Image (cartoon, one colour):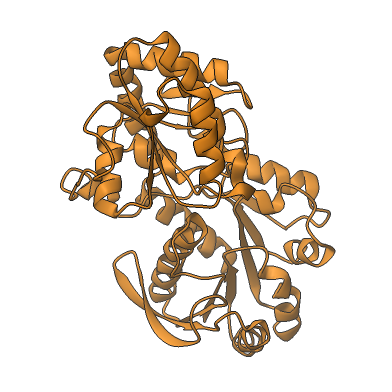
Length: 369
């Protein structure tokens, strides 16, 4: 049996989306080797239900956050499992218990970013040390695991998260709708939660840079920010203080898939100078639509953005540098076109679902020996 253990699968978010991708490939692998699979999800609603993962429905048992019930169920199933795969190190601290139940069990754990960029608790570090394989969202995250975690896994690999499997195929035919509160005018775009705890995303830096660009660029353009959260009031205040035309900073809030597709397709560029990004799926979504991208010169972002080729990397909190990059791209349609084409090439070379599926299945087969 292949046992999949997940934080949750039904909510929106990068961890959840990658969890669904992993669930799909765990099911595919189990089918290919002729064994059953069972999936347990700590955070999803209690009981048995179907979850759509990559166009297929799989049965998942949710535990509604009940950790004790989740652990007991995992221990029971571990006795006859060949592989137990954890989609996050925070739930993988039970891995040593599973190994006591079944000494032949192979443990796999995926790490995403911030959670391993500093020493974790001893128990979580110990669990990593019990893993046959640890995968990481980026090379940078891999380096942080090796630097900060005392107990090292037997093997550690970078496993880039992909775009959804049908994303590229349907990108031109996707329904697109302009959000009502977004004027039909040139704009730059950011997509991010507006959470005070995630100020590292750099929305405030971008607003300040936008204010500088307003002073040096004669063309009229807007800055559209997609996302909801409690930090919006502070960000609106920065716009009022730093921008000569603060009404051109448009807080679009939450948007539908069709509205987000329109925003990605129509923006001049995508900007998110985050200083602590594990990788950044939002960059890939913009790049797949042939857009230049600007991100922070930190974390896993340099593995997505080749500065000077498909966009630029910005030093931390450097709004002057960011303003120069923005105004340079606004001024040159030819540069935007060149960067956009390079963006699409990078996606096709490194971040298609087929590449993820092939790599993940190979890693699973190597564990299952």
